[in-house]
Each structure stands twice: as C-alpha cells, then as structure tokens.
Length: 131
Image 1 (cartoon, rainbow, N blue to C red):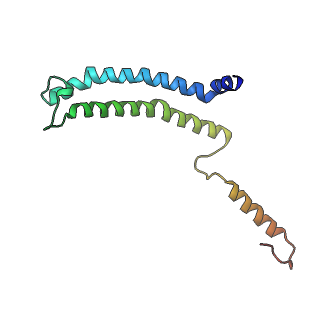
Image 2: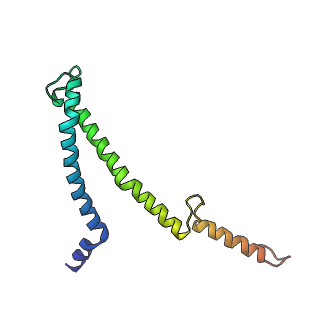
Image 3: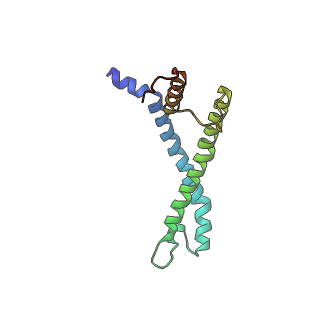
C-alpha cells in the first residue's frame, strides 16, 4: 500500500489529474461556445435549422465542422495558454543559467571526442598513437 501511495503522490500523477480536470472543464466551455456562437452561424450559412441539419448532398457535414472547430479552439488555447508560456519560461530560465538557445548543446559524444583529442595532443612525439 505504501508503494501505491508514493505513486499517487508523485508530481506527474497529480499534474496529470489536474490537467484532466481542467481539460474537461475547458471542453465544456468550448462546447458551449460552439453551440451558442459557431453552430448558429454555420446553420445560417447552410440554411439549416441547426448545425446537425447542415448537409452537403448525403453527408451531414455540420457535425464534422463543429467537431473540427472544437478541436481547433482547444488546440489554440492549449498552445497559447500552456505551451508558448512554458517555452518562454524555460527560455528565460535557461538564459538566467547562462544557457543560450543559439549555441549547440554539447553531447557526451562531443565531450569524449574532446578528451580523445587532448590525449592525442599530450602524447610524446615518436610514440605510436593508439586507436
């Protein structure tokens, strides 16, 4: 039971739970916006009583358009409210630490190559280099 409690109290699990709750609440807002604003506009454009009645030939395109609009609104808000500010915050934090986004990050392989080159440079002349 102790392991389960530790798992539940990890930061990632708590953050995920908060994200699900906030996402669900936000989805309700987007659905209400789409139902109150977007659907009547689309229904008017298709001369239908409601968006579900909007048809092109045999296809009920209104439901698809509403779902796409919901998705785009959610994606835009997630990007502009969560992703972009977090990227700016990370960039500011990196700048404070002296890490530049423009300079390439040195990998372990790069460091090993530098060590190899330094060791080769330190070898006494006339000794056979090692592979």
